[in-house]
Length: 160
Ligand code: ADP
Image (cartoon, rainbow, N blue to C red; front, side, top):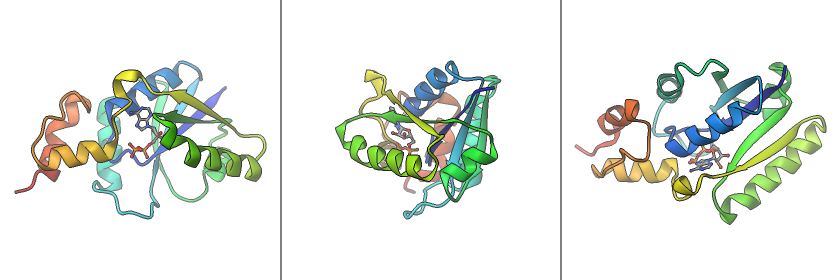
């Protein structure tokens, strides 16, 4: 069984993430969406909220599972018998960081491969930070995130 892992903070999940998830899920038997706990900057949404958004959006996709994770990605991979890390690339600016992470992970565990998927051109400008910024001023995020979570995002971020 081929198990892939797509790690990220998903703060919140966007249509760009969803596009990568759907495309990656076709390449494996099971895709684990690994939601990062430890990040230097505090997330806008709690772990529970980020996981809940993903679960609402991904319900019905039976080979995709959402699991929180902290610590080293290579340890998480081993624990879940996963072989491959999936990363999305939007622009050259994503490359340097992802290049370093892929090489570091390769060094920690040579068995693990990192697979990069190019963004869908429609979502090349899309990031969670942009969604948060726009939502906080009441701007339209309906084309940027899945419909099920639009109101929940406004609820939390819209400046009173
Ligand atoms: P962000 O960079 O939006 O804060 P994450 O840290 O949650 O998002 O990113 C998780 C993964 O998803 C990374 O591999 C990132 O490159 C990828 N990703 C994020 N947004 C997009 C997008 N619009 N198109 C393709 N990949 C994306």
